[in-house]
Amino acid sequence: MSSRWAAAAIALLLLALVPLRLTHATGTYTYWFPWYDSASPGMSVDNIHVVDPNASPANVSITLPDHSPLGGQIGPYGEQYWSWPSSIGGPVEVTSDQPVNVSQRVTYGLSFNEYPALPSTSAGKSFWFPWYDKASPGILNDNIHLVNPGPTNANVTATLGHGFVFQLTVNAQSATYHSFPAGQIGGPVHITSDQPILVSQRVQWNQSFNEIAGIPDSAMSTFNVINWYDQESPGYFQDDLHFLNIDPAQTAQVTVHYAAGGGDRSITVAPQSETWTEFPNTIGGPVTITSTPVGVAVTQRVNYWNSFKEYRALQPSDATKDAWFNWYDNASTCFVQNNIHLYTSGHSVGTITLGNPAKSMPFDVTGEGYFSFPLGTIGGPVHISVATGYDAVYPESRTVRCPPPPPPPPPPPVPRPTHLRIPGLGCPTCDMAVEEVGLDGSGNMGVPSNVYDAAWFDQMPRPGDQGDAVLTGHLDWTTTSCAAFCFLPQAWVGMDLYVDREDGSTIHFVVDQKNYYDANSPPSWLYTTSGSPHMSLITCGGDYIPGYGYTKRLVVLTRQV
Figure 1 (tube, one colour):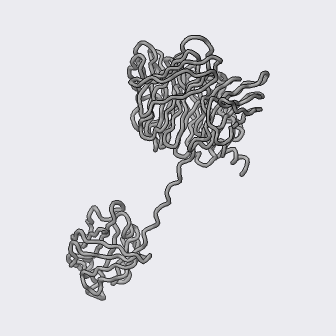
Figure 2 (cartoon, one colour):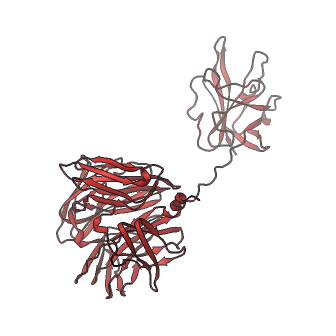
Figure 3 (spheres, one colour):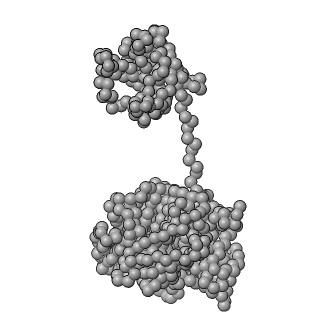
């Protein structure tokens, strides 16, 4: 395996989680999740994880409307998680007497998503999402979730691009969600409110679920970094970088530096607009983004097999020398990789510690690097500590779920017909070979070359396959008054027919109906390619007009039994 493919094997991306920034002060700390769901089809796990990164124990309470409260005491530097079985609703409120790190870990279908809680202090009146999609194939839901943590009802307006708008009221201490009409795709989405609110976007695409927090106006930055990019590994068919400029007047001049993508790429983002780029067939990191004269926000939208993930680029405010992740898992079923990615603009040395009793590993990073504990490791919390005198890191935890199972092999093709037998008619021509014909030079269905043979039309299903198999035969010919289907007008409803096939098998049909139709007006059910297996026998009928032919067609419809 080449070094690039080895990197791909251990860097497949389904989730990137950035640790919460903690404010060490006294008082009550409140965090929110807009929605909780362990009840909808496919939602197999929805756990609320809490880490206490302090030297003092944390007393935690977790509430969901109309459900019993959860929580308890977490020891210093400890971790616990809670869940409500078969429950759905929102919002979830987490309170603690210590600053804690809170996240929601969700398993949906074959995907996994971890979403950091929104602290009350991050509530605001203006938020953005770079992109909205309720039109692409596989999109099931794209909902904007809104939490009002305050005491006053909030009047909210959401605008998609420069067109679609919806308005609604979010009651005090409540949550709701809304979406734009089906068929809408584009960006950006701008959410404004007359009261401080919290906002997220929850997307279901095929077998995956993703949630991302709204981007506040204050999150525009002249420096962003993506730790890892992959549009090369198996299953990665899309990896788009989206750039959002919210400035009402100034254009953002963006430079994307990605060594594996050929160096620098210049991008222009118009005022209050969004654009995107990609680097096909590349893998590596980091991707650094600078902009001038105004800052931008950047997200990465990734499609991996049947899953979708979007997450925000890291900014200078994310650089830290002390970071925590709630949980680590490369042991659970279908969790095949969990990498800790670290980027530094200089040189960073330190230790990554997991759980209690602690497992630890050192790191020494210049630029970007990633680290993992041995396969089969599970637990938490994860603590990243940079040694004194070294540079801060931009940390992420990236988790890979297993790819979807391969599709079942297609069924073997139905064997071709070789012989047609109609014993009930008792005629010498009622046991005949079956030829294969297509379209003739005029674009019409071909006819058998031997007047005593039937012909299967190979543009239609084979007898025994789904839909209507079509067999034709002559009624008579210039050389005979009794060709292959001369006795077919005597067929009756319930009569048996048998088709022998190239593999030696025989299938049985029974006549359902017999009717004459104008030569140019076939019945609507003729030539269908779906439904239960049936077979139509067609020959001439009606009056014979010299120079024209027969005026009608006899169609005998049969069904397989």
